[in-house]
Length: 191
Ligand code: ADP
Image 1 (cartoon, rainbow, N blue to C red):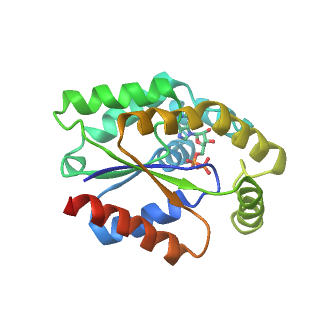
Image 2: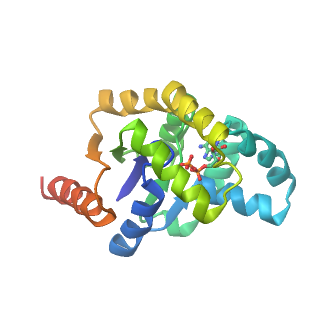
């Protein structure tokens, strides 16, 4: 199964990805994590990405394409994956289509984890206090949410038009959201 998780910052898609990985035994591919590892490792890519991430902006499509192509070509991704953080704009969505077509596995299941904007802000404020992520400062978060609305929301439309997207309400407990996701997936594997 090839699953793409879409959701605003604070929607809980990272948390749900971890649950899904346990349940489905598929690799978790998080572009945020891939970038943060590159930053920590101090690679050239990481140094370039850090400034952009800390400003709350999107890393360039070129860099992301290299990163994701490389990751998806690894053996463990052949049986499927949980993709979290990519695509974040229409260019990336089309690039992903091409990569998967080339690999002969064009079908994806897209889950949009939908959370009210006010709740997103509250959750990220909580996470900032707990984890101290450098891009969780309030001003930066507002920018990330704005970029999500401008660039990533169209990706929701893109997959809706293709008929491969399911909306999942991302409010309530982690367990409740997870159960909603699992029932969508179950429905689709049965049909
Ligand atoms: P969140 O989902 O909370 O925004 P992520 O961990 O997914 O956090 O991403 C953190 C940051 O990494 C983003 O704000 C962005 O700067 C960068 N990033 C992650 N994925 C992408 C992507 N597909 N394209 C461009 N930038 C990305």
